[in-house]
Amino acid sequence: MQSTAIGERQRVSAGQAFRNWRQVIATANLASDAPMDPISKWLIITRAAVFSMTYTSGLIGGLLAAAANDFDINWWFFGLALLGIVIAHASNNMINDYFDLEGGVDDMNYPRALYAPHPILSGMISKRGLALAIVVTNVLDAAIMLYLFLERGPWVLVFALAGLFISAGYVMKPITLKRRGLGEIGVLIVWGPLMIGGTYFVAAGELPAWVWAACAPYALVVMSVLIGKHLDKFDVDKAKGIKTLPVLLGYGVSQRLNQIIMVGFYAVVAALVATSVLAVWVGLVVLAVPRLVQVLRIYNNPRPAEAPPGYPVWPLWYVSAAFFFNKRAGELFVVGLILNLFLQVYVSDLLPG
Figure (spheres, rainbow, N blue to C red):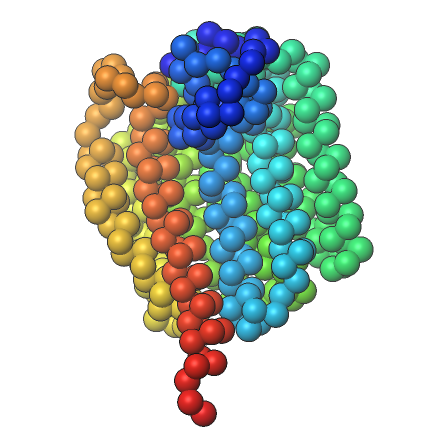
């Protein structure tokens, strides 16, 4: 359901703009009868609908650091790191669209141009304009990286440049991780150790070994989202010779694998709580089990032949289900960390002795 106002500059009231932003964040689209405003346009171009995965990883890193250091972290550095990884995600999405189009992957019949407007193919922005936006976002990130490097030291460069290498290498030649069945592993690394661990380091100035384990649960459910997306694109990717992990493993095996990964999220959380790596309050993620059950049932059935009424991101299906679980699990994970921090820092001060 793509807006007919693509590329047009229109006067939009504040109330309408706010409704637009909510819709774009929720669906990656803007209704055809809604006037396009500049912010909605850029939210669509950068695919801001999936930024929740990135700021969740960042929040996990910062909250873990705050709890481990009795709230004594550099909150300014933490905020900059959080901003930096969100900008990096925006840049990565635009890089994917630019180079997948250049490499002949994206066209008007490829799922990327069907579930939401492709920035260039839809006419929202020119190829040159998208390239400029990629440069600008990377310059902004470079400035944040340089500042934090001067304040925190060379490990900032390691985290930032490793993330850039994997993100750009996802689609850019000669690396093209996406075509080699390595894109999913790349996402696991970026949204886990690099984002969570990197944010922890920037906030606290150190990185204890236990943090690497604490990165694992949420990184797994981010990886499940990409596996779901590649399941939805299985036939066309196979035809184009794009060897994503589902193409290499097979459709049915990949469906079961994603179910195992989502269930495995709970196994890993339980193990980390039992070993005191994570606070017991992270166990709030159990409240996402009903949503997990819904998603597992979706994965037990074939994709419908056509979009259900009102479904906004067709032909995507399994990725939407995985993201549906990811959001609730991530939200509860963060709430659990916030509760732990509150109880640790404030309630303990009220206890006698």
